[in-house]
Image 1 (cartoon, rainbow, N blue to C red):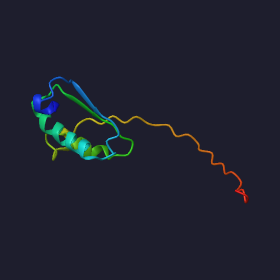
Image 2: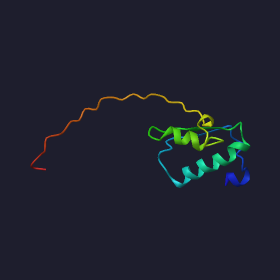
Image 3: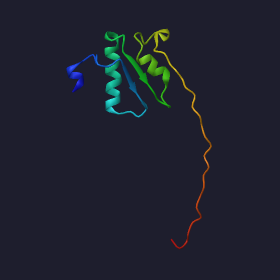
Image 4: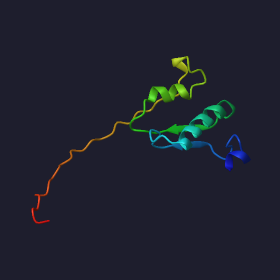
Length: 96
């Protein structure tokens, strides 16, 4: 296990967690673990992406002082595009 050999993950300068809303034990563990090592690794960058999570709660989670809104991690929002969806139905075949 990589964390056993290098508890501060010094091999990495950036860790990206994509689709963080797809909760799993692995993602939850990693988010908690990164929060614990970030004070010891101020050079480590963590990028959390999701289309549906509450960004303020994640920013507070990674803040060195969660009770201080001014200390929250930065939030970068990228607007997405939506495309029209055309729904087509095939006629029901009585003989099928």
